[in-house]
Length: 460
Image 1: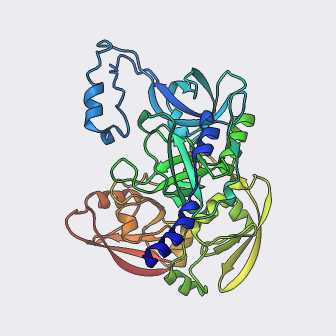
Image 2: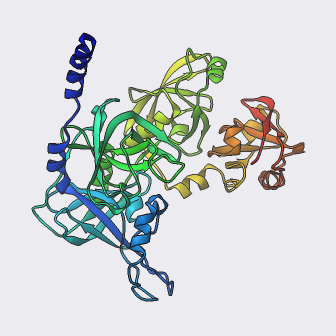
């Protein structure tokens, strides 16, 4: 009896501290909108109307599918029908709205449904694929608008709330906590994502992430899933990043980002020891791109960047967002570790080129990404050839998730032999890779920082 009373006394204060989201939802929900699009027409293609087709349809209960598929046909050849694709939120009383780039990409018409059930056509003011942010405008006034917070003040463990339209169900509310900040995702190098455990599903994309003060701190953008639905890992674009992008889209129609011009890799424990570092931290420069700001400033392959513009670089993924935030033309100080010594380099940041310009400028002899190894390689440069006394080989310029990454290959490695065959050039390397068996490991000889080694490689 006494023990039970004590447990109640301990439990009640803790439960009393759980947040009450009712007033927050009442205050913020009117500014959240549903976004649907009409895809661009594609000749005589036949379009059928299915309210639950598209991403995430397989996650719906079967009874919903059965019921809605009893609806009468709209005709054998229907015009493209609007599909509910995502969410958004109003940031100004005169009708500016933020959402995701992937929600409105490829649309001929964008429709916004407000909280009061009005449906208005929106103009896409601008859209940025790299950050996955888009700005829309509807012709209306006196609209409810969200209050913007500061995403850089978020702390892990803090309560957050999302409002959106998962699977087309308008104004669904889910809550959770911040799991991590400044999270780097594959192929998303310029966004330091907020990771949460807030339930996010197809249709939530572009919707707001609120803190307990009712301020927007992020735009819900992605989930990690193996099922197509929520699995406890959700990612939001920090509102500070989104607003900077939105302001540039509104004022100049495009987004400019800072560019250093290096290919970097993670510093492992083994690499840190080999370079004489106290701990595995920083961004290791595997390649300095020709004609880049890094080359002009005197950066070298093998330099380890551990502080950029006064901010520590613990992981290699920390560097791109920091560089991207610097305005082109500004100069910053970069702390590096080179040859066992700490040095400071001043660099004037350039403008990030388009991806096609980057690929063309990095090497005229680059090969397309291998479908099997997920690598991009280039012809062996004269500097490595003479420095490491190599006769042939190809240099790895990028590594995507796949067999090559799983084998431990990194940017800057020189592949000299594939399954016993000497690699003479890029074309011959691609042919050798395509001929590899998929049922057993094969030896791959590489030269890493001048040291030759064999590693096992297995293709699925």
